[in-house]
Image 1 (cartoon, rainbow, N blue to C red):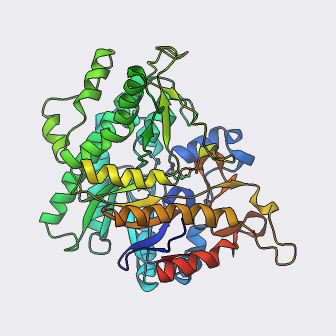
Image 2: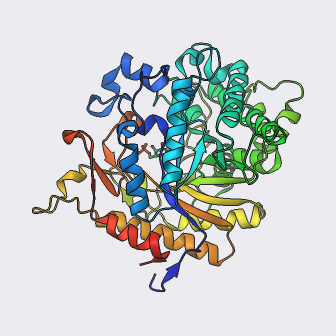
Length: 468
Ligand code: BGP
């Protein structure tokens, strides 16, 4: 793309991170164990280089420095998450030390001139609730609604932008359907139960948000949303009816499920019908229609890393007896980020914007995560300055931002861009394997922060809103 593109002046330009991946302090100040801590304690070999959840990227110690870095790079906002296991005690009441940490973080952010977007849940179920069934238990949805309400009451006068969940599809998929994360189950039925109950939990939390608004506990311009990894779904160029059917269910389960919930207050009927035909039992209770109807939000975040390309499956069930809706389709022109195994397809963000414009025209959205994680990046150092030379990061972000700018030009209702992992952070079971940051975290030097080569470019774009 040669034409110079710009982003709107009032655009949210910032960073995304999460509590469990940055804070550290896993067992201080009354914090309870969450599933990451429990998995780290039980099976540290499951984590890359045996680095568990304990320290994050040491944000609780270095937050002032990190906020100064964001500010210096010209960013105006960032997203993090409150950890349920830090904010509340086992009785569902505020843990004063946990609350004090978030008050201090939000105060320091205000002082730095940064708007904080607060997400309430980022894959971090408190372990005592997991032991009561986690998202398979409807009572945990009620407990989540209580947690959300406590957070609204505690921080309602400090925070304007709230989100109920980050990527709610990921726990059903990675914990219950595919054995990727603890407890590594392989049951599509369980995954559906969890996905349904998370949808209920989201709607209950939005209802609590509305209650807090009515009670005058929130800022006048407060807003609530949900953040999803909407990976635009594609199939082959000349698809068969079976390919299109694969596309319908893939897109239906991962994208339309949440888009319908947050814009229409119900789940997509064609997807529910297919699940019922397959004998899947959703834990639907009487009056759930009314519960889910409360789930409509003010705006959404779209985490975009890669497209989803699918084709008709070659068999109807997998080795665990779960139904197979689709198989990956390898696009002949694909470009890969080999470190992460994800396709790089910047135009996907434009396609998402156009889809929203066509199908959900009133919906405001922003890019809530986008980034590139590279393995063994520390080998690409300038021999003299030792600075990481990450030109590929500039290329990746420039290409994506260009498509964001084009989408806005073509009428997309996109109001911001948050880069994921601006300062290297802990990435679940991959720990510090793939580095996303514009700023390096040196694990050998007490988590010291050092700008990579790309940081100067980011600053230029963030301060001018011109994509250079
Ligand atoms: C998103 C998550 C983030 C983050 C990111 C990068 O799905 O919301 O928490 O981790 O992906 O992925 P990964 O860390 O697996 O490389």
